[in-house]
Each structure stands twice: as structure tokens, then as C-alpha cells.
Image 1 (tube, helix red, strand yellow):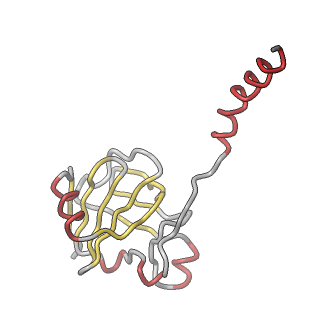
Image 2: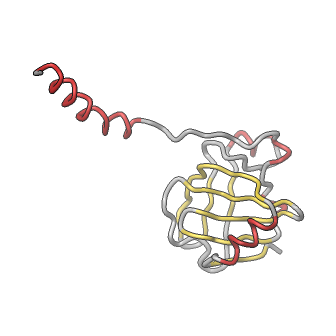
Length: 137
């Protein structure tokens, strides 16, 4: 009985420490040609403090952020920044990899957790709930 209680106590005491040390899991969008190209964005919407959607011509994307970013889109500006390796290649694509960020005038860079392609109907449904939006020139 004592050993069961000791094992239970040890597992509870180590669980928070393990969670704090874990890094977010990334599942990048592939192939890279399917990734979000900031230079091709026609319009974007901030759906909530952790979700942004963007359209690049006929393609639609959902961008999930690692944390709450409540100031995104203020001033109708949004900057999508690729990680160093994708910038070095020259395309500057965002695929949902470590080091990618979204920011705006009043919001420090927010880390990207994932990027997925969505269909036009999903894009329209999410854009209807958006708190902010903008269009690229």
C-alpha cells in the first residue's frame, strides 16, 4: 500500500516539470510549395487571440499561434515572418515550423504553432467571426 502511494505521489510531482520542459510539436505543411507565402497574401483576418486566417489568391490558410496575442491586427497591419532557413532559401514561406512569427504594430512577435490549408467555406465561416481584418496592397 505504501509503495502505491509513493509511486502516485512521485508521478504527480514530476508531471508539471515534464510539461514545462516539453517544446511544442510541429507538423509542417508539405510540400513547401503549399506553404503560406506572405508576399502573396490578398487578405487576412484575426479570428481570435490565437487564430489568424489568410488568403493568397485561390488558397486559404489557418494559422494557429502558440500563445494568446490580443493586440494582433490593431492598425490594420499584420506581418508574417518566416524562419531563418526559409528566408535564406528565398521564398520566405511559412509552413508551421519553429521560428515563424506573426506580429503587428502593437503586438510583439507571436510564435506560429501550425499552418493548415482550409477550403473557401471554412475561410468564409471563420472570417465572419473575425475581430480585425486587412488587405495587402
